[in-house]
Amino acid sequence: MKARVAAIAAIALALSGTAAEPAHDVYPPIARLDSSDLLYRQLSDLVAQSLAARQTGGQYPDLVIFSYKMPEDAEIVDIAARLNCPYETIVTLNRIGSVRPLRKGEVLLLPSVIGVYLPDEPSGDLEYLMDSWRRPEAASGIPLTAVVGGKSVRFRLFPGSYFHPAERAFFLSALFRFPLPKGRMTSGFGVRPSPVDGQSQMHQGIDLAAPAGTEVCAARSGTVSYVGFSDLLGNHVVISHEGGWETVYGHLSSVSVRLKENVKSGMMIGKVGSTGVSTGPHLHFEVRLKGAPRDPATVLPRMRP
Image (cartoon, rainbow, N blue to C red; front, side):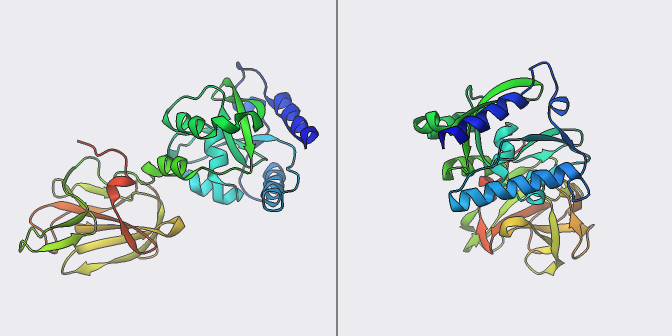
């Protein structure tokens, strides 16, 4: 086992390049994330070996790092799914501190060995949290150097590891983007007096006040699973997302998407209105996980003024 660890570390160091070199010059570039690309097929095979090693306790493949220049905006989870690779592997090596859209032109490092990559010198809240969780086991991590964003960074690799629950919760705290360009929360999640009849009732989302006609955007990429009207929510849209998540957008004045349409994060799906049971223009926004309502404030970025 020690020999295997040393071999992986040596390969990682050999691939590291220098701090002055950009990532796409140091690492073999994958042009397309599909089977027509030879390097993609090689990486997919190595990642499959890594997943098998984690399940069986067998040997991990040698560490090889590839690069991929984003041809268009995409979600981290979508890239991870196309590689059948845990998202922790990608975000920790690339030092991505929270869920965010990957932008066109951004260069990602894609490693062959799944696991958590912890920088020797953490920076940012997520890495500090990871360091606090993993300090006792740091000596067991495999040392390596990688060029991230044009800078040489020393890491310790924990093969086969996933985020601890606290790390995952922190990373996913911005799982969804804010559905309005700006807005003010006027009613939170939970039991509240109804603004119409004053009776206590469960409010399964949050209300965001905004001028009528304000564009409402998809909080994450997904598929439109419902478009319709109800007496309570008026015109509303439901979008299904990976992992059993759903988002609901209510009281819309107009809807600009169709049933079963695929939408990207940030795409306009309608406009703020006051249809249904409403006392004025606002967006009623819900987040559900496997059908159960979740407080949207816990999975959104900080509310915008």
